[in-house]
Amino acid sequence: MDLFQLSTATNAVGDAQATSEETLREENRRLRKVCHALMERVETGGSADTAPYAAFERSVLLAEQVRGAH
Image (cartoon, rainbow, N blue to C red):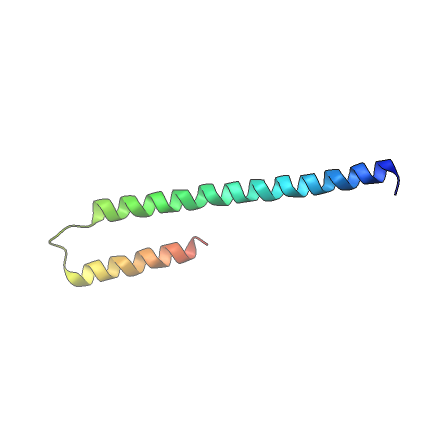
């Protein structure tokens, strides 16, 4: 393998790592956004006088949203 091929292969690995890191950062940003939205919803949507079924229903809807975010 000559020097040019070696540097090209090294650049390809570096590019793949950068792309992977960028993808992970984007996923992390998206998951933080989902988590923040869910925390806000729980903090503002829950009240002591809510009927038990409504609380259950809200829980199911939140679970579906979290599963759909993947």
